[in-house]
Image (cartoon, rainbow, N blue to C red):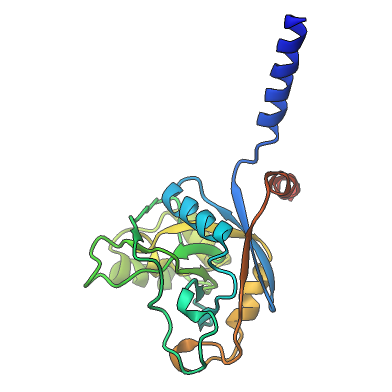
Length: 232
């Protein structure tokens, strides 16, 4: 009996481990569609903070309050919830910041999730906002354009394989290693494009509010998604 019980427990452990997804995912839902974002394991501080806020419902009802076509869409300011049309947004958030987690392999290609932050003059450590984030839309670059970015903005050479991504998919290379990238859209990139197309007014705020709801995918949902993505 003990041997049988041991085997049953082992089988249960194996099944549980096998069902564990490789990543954690969040879904952002808006009137302009929805997208699913894979959070990177390489940036655990940002990943865990985003998951915490999403589970608490902290993002629900907030706006994509700053939108710049061919650049990015920004959200996560708790002050944007029920904000008046003339409200100045972009300064809200929790009292804490998150230490930068720069990784050379994580860069600003189209569709990545990255952390907003205060400028270098008051934030030389480049620490991230506790809640505000942006999703890159960006644009496609040529080699000559990337050469200028390297010389004037980055002061380092963009790896060849990353150059190819910027030349085909596009992105915002001038932000690399200055803002923490901690996830990417794996489904529903059309939502980003649709929001980026919205007419904007003062402060690059969409003239029609774009509210969001953010939820965390269950392990079962995440595993099913990874199985679908693996077939692409």
